[in-house]
Length: 439
Ligand code: SF4
Image (tube, rainbow, N blue to C red; front, side):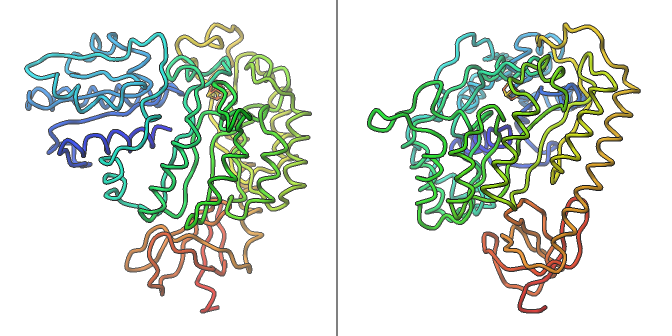
């Protein structure tokens, strides 16, 4: 989500003559697009802002902007802590950054993160000509994110998203289809549909098609008909909203990649209840079974939080048992950290840091073993791989299961081409191979 927001910021600014640069020392404007889902991400923002204090002192004309969830959450407090910041822009106002930057001259500070009521995000109106031009100008045009909804109604007790991004709202079907058409016309071959919970697309603000409710599976089917598009992915899915119709799409839609990220968070029903996740492990496992019945080779990844308040040794064992049952292809696992304003931050029975670290290490060690075992099963097989980048020595691409694949270079393919690669080596996080003609 944040990566897409950063793209939007960059696209809007390019229309005003700004040129994107990664070199902070020579930049006139520094924009830090932030995430506050974990304490560590927020700490990094604060530490970067601290470092920029000296830069601002030596170049007072430099404009520093903080955007995204930390800006939304902190608002004016951020300026109290970091007075050298010029602009604080909440999640709903990123489209306004070019105008806001013009407004904050001669030491004037602007804060736009005080929204209590959330409007339909500004990306919903038709794509402007300027955006179309920008889309064609950005690098990696073969692969893009398309936001289909924003916000979340689920209120998991550990999560700040419903407070920082607002209530769930879906884009209109035609806006999304138009955007994908523009992207495909400009050379995009793979799109990833984005939302906090894409499975509930169209439900909260009732997207309809001639008065019939229009769901995420229908959207996938319509997008798959766009000629020239080679791959579709989506993220993220809430397990409680994963419908059989959606699972069937993995069997029926040729260009839907056989990959799903299905965050479970914990293996204990007691912990899931305290997290307000609204499913049990029994229900989750049933869905995994149905999913694999429709699509036996689907790669499944997940998110895990260890050390949620009150997580006992036995609760954690349930997470390890779940890992053995599902055998995830990969996972993002973290130690629980209190986030300001969340219900879980008020829960007692905090788990000691040392125990969280031990549990995380045990989970990750076993996950790495499983990932390696699963990746090794591809050795000796050929996989279609979309080329993403090439240098003088080799190319890198992605399988439909989302493996990073390192390819021996002897090809003249360009990013976005799909080539068959014979896999001869597997690691925990990537595969290695050569183009099939050479095997
Ligand atoms: S589903 Fe839960 S974890 Fe995901 S964004 Fe919504 S509240 Fe946060």
